Amino acid sequence: MADTPLPEIATLSFEEALEELEGIVRQLEAGRGRLDDAIGSYERGAALKRHCEAKLNEAKAKVEKIAFAADGSLKTEAQNLD
Image (cartoon, rainbow, N blue to C red; front, side, top):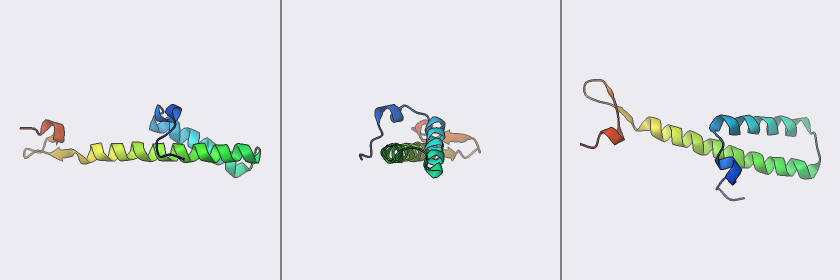
């Protein structure tokens, strides 16, 4: 499966993707459904996991760009262009 999330997954917020992923995990752990459905659910779960990881990495990168100015105020790299 590709590293690029499916289009419908790509539009999900982190919270939406995590909630769906948790539901898939519960379903798989319960052993409900047919094998073919479980395989499809596992594949979707893997895509959701990658999406959540990407969202977390984006948030981490934003947090790492935050810095403190000499006066103790917050500034971001975008503001530090002078």
